[in-house]
Length: 471
Image (cartoon, rainbow, N blue to C red):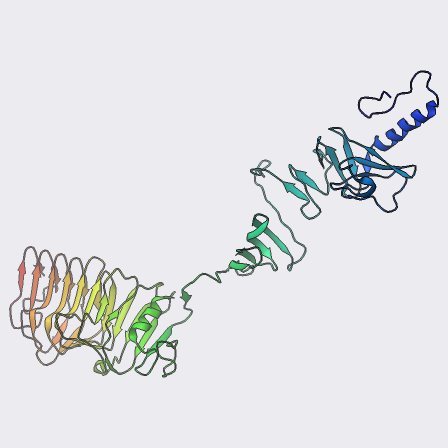
């Protein structure tokens, strides 16, 4: 039987008997296909009680009376199912989705140009009731319409989720947004199941927290750490008791080196006794000062006695300001310095410098600066009392120094060389020493503001050489 080219409607043939049969068949097809609107497109089996004339797009994997008719139009007519295979370009309104679909020759997809308010839309992929907008593309562009552009993700209540989810193989790996509350979260997952909040930003204060990122503790007030011979480095150091204090001074130094001081000072309070630790100062964060304190009234009660290495060392570039207060320093064995500063800043006061096998104070390299900010005492000799070398700088102006026991210095009481600078104007020395008063060499400078050749203690005249200046 001949049929039409597009809808496959049967022609009435010349001299055909029972012409009404052919005519009615054509009318039935027209009724099914013209102004096509289907009830549903997601059923793979016939509904139990279809209405007369109801039409459906048969879903993939059809069964029962629909078996073998995937993608076709199933129309319930005169108590039976009739099937119509679509041609490319056919459109159908899907009533339960309020969306217009088109047949592209192999599958039904939401049609371009569907009206505003379409409930589901797939671009080169299939959307569903959860992912109502689905896009398969190498990239997506959201651009401005004359000025700026905002991408808005709105949720119903604070406990709901508004976020961007990043997946691998459709398994979550990273998410950012307001998930579960109104704070902003950035979280990650190794498997799409276990999640860790890497960053949380408080919605009220704007303060960001990093729960899994090691951070320096920020001081909000001045703090004191205690060191005692009966303490333990397993303690927190915050109480002056055997169960609270640290055992070693270096543990306290390392602890404050891990703080963010902010604007506050931290004090390391060392108990009376003799300590034999070699101390290494650490870089500090913040504007505060760290004070290494013994007994400012009687420094001899807190003795740092070293037989190997330097007593207090800053051997590399050390940020921040350290202060020594109320300590007695002494070294023995080899050439051992009391305070050796390299590219760091250290203040001191109420210090007793006892016998040393090296220099009491040695500052070297650019950025090294030691400043006496209060009175101190010298009770033992050494190679020199203070030595500024290689761009290092020492400042002790306006300070009173008490010498006891006539200490002896094998090189000079003070010395400067290699562009080292020693500024010592306005000093007051009580007591005497033996040895050369000063040496200045290789463009070093000792500045006394005209203090004269006998300004510093000693029994031998000072000397200058190779561009060194004594002023």
